[in-house]
Amino acid sequence: MAISRVRVKINGVWTNLTYNSTTGRYEGTIAAPAATSYNLSGQYYPVIVEATNDAGTVTTKDDSDAALGSSLRLTVKETVKPVITLISPTNGSYIQNSNTSVIFTVLDEANGSGVKESSITMKVDGVPAVLAKSSVTNGYQCTYTPEDSMSDGSHTIVIDAQDNDGNAALQVSASYVIDTVPPTLTLSEPTFAITNQPSCVFSGTTNDNLSTPVSVEFMLNGEDAGSAAVDFSGNFSKTLTLTEGENNIKVVSTDKAGRSTTVTKTVKLDTSIPQITNVSFEPNPVSTSQPVKITLEVV
Image 1 (cartoon, rainbow, N blue to C red):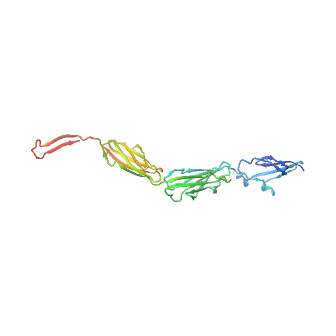
Image 2 (cartoon, rainbow, N blue to C red; image 1 turned 90 degrees about the horizontal axis):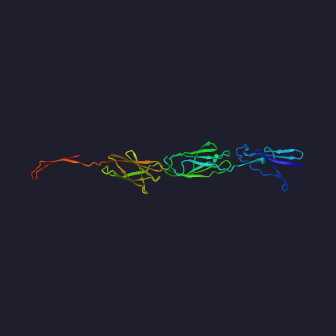
Image 3 (cartoon, rainbow, N blue to C red; image 1 turned 30 degrees about the vertical axis):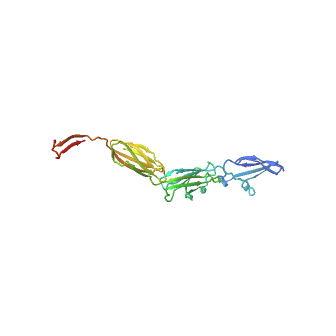
């Protein structure tokens, strides 16, 4: 009996095999299917082998064969890593809310093996976090909401995941600062409430233990009057030009977390010059060492 043809069928494609006289076997090399077998029934590609002799007799074996079936199952794994994307809070951000949720997605390639749900983990300051996971296209969106208020200060999160073919995503880590306390703000100058000089210096100090540097903005009579530079020690100073009459000044110090403290000050500008008129003495003339009444008007 002579064998005229031996071939194999994988993923709908037939490939002829060549006899190797050294090994006494039929051999061939094919490209594996481009897609993972994870999503197929049994999570493998079924293979069919066929041998034909010169008389035209054909023998066929497939994955259901009692003897060879387990050998005719080709497992194909993808090599693309899933992607972790941190939505909020972003790395380096400052947060006012001590119960802020962490939200991120883990997505695999289209037609990939899919994200392995149990592999999605996150640690907050080194402690495993309980995640709420919801299915989205090609993966999951995950949310961590603290059961208790988190302390003010810096916190670090580390996220890991992999797909069902064992490809680990690039680890994502981020740090953010929780700051629930507004900055301090003291206005030390001016100490007076009325002046005859339009140019007036406003000075003070501001500070925030967690979210420095802070910004200082001025409002003069309801209008934006610009900002003041704040030095390393928290000192600031700004010169404003007052208008005649009552001037309402608002100083606002804002930290990186967006919390602010406001101080208001009212300063009156009076540039009027007193006018003296109608001076009189009674009696006039007056005897030596006698009392004399002086009368005048000031406007």
